[in-house]
Length: 451
Ligand code: SF4
Image 1 (tube, helix red, strand yellow):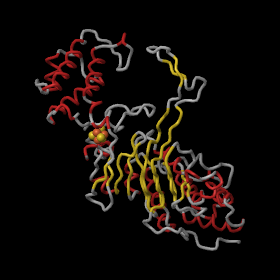
Image 2 (cartoon, protein in one colour):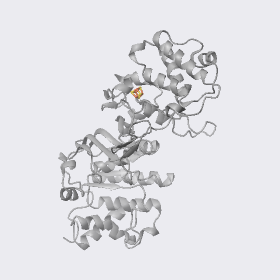
Image 3 (tube, helix red, strand yellow):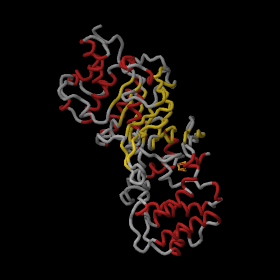
Image 4 (cartoon, protein in one colour):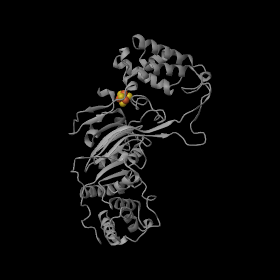
């Protein structure tokens, strides 16, 4: 064969637009926490013996399930380090899953041998963030685009060249530049070369890992427009990974929001942006920079640090930062009492106020009136602990040794054990399918507020 038999974009897939092309079920990827000389050796001076052995796990992706339909773009968004790139790579089996299944067109990729996978890779491709480092500077762009075709034994030399040139044109580059090296191209053009390379083997599904993050904003839209045109022409399906919500909003049909290894919300784009149901999604949307220079740079800021994926919170992983943590059932608190208690608990845990007498703490956080009943007694004890510490309490953090403990630490532990740890948010992992208000598909929200 001297030329490809069919025009580019022939879309010879056996699935119809809208049918499920990828089904991920319970996908999990845990890594060993470290791999150095003392990997697996834990030292705890409070224990006897103080040295123990056992490998800590980083739960990068934990029990993720989702479906992607033929021809759609599913945007995957979350803060950096939330596991979205690991999820993309695990779906492609570039890294092996710890558990779960990945069904692509009905076949389980997680069970495939290396050789079976190698053959499947013509149908599943990936585009990476950095167009500079993913192109070999010594190769001409024609060779770069032809490389995957050669690996899959597609066409002869002449056919590959013809296809490479046609693809260059499709991605908006001049086919006469076939013999140029990558350094002759701008960042945006290099990402177009990456696109042409990925499409050369006629894939059905492309995982795009932050493909426009390294580009200027003005170039981003151009590259995304080209990706959309190619999607239509080639019948492509994209999993589009990005941390930038405006990019996700531009390109996605549906959006999945990821936090600390879990998918916390999935909905059609308009539904997700206009009617978010998960407090994390709401916080992310509120922290989009405001274009009006008279306003402050960001509207809402997520409180607290992202917990370590080595030791993620039980139940809902967002609960240590969630502004809407649900009250434990046993205390019968009013909404106002719980709002005050929750704010006080957070402030004690993070030590966000100056030491002060008990009456001032009560006034500052509770308007003078503590909650009624047992909850009020617990809060009163915590107030006293913090107040008693104002004469020179040390600045140790929660979790320090007994010698370092102070009133703040004891108060934080008391409040967390009595309230946060007893909340349904700590006890059960949430997963709810909701009616979509603005779309037609199910709106998934992993939050107990929607029980
Ligand atoms: S389940 Fe609880 S902690 Fe998690 S997002 Fe919902 S309200 Fe917040």
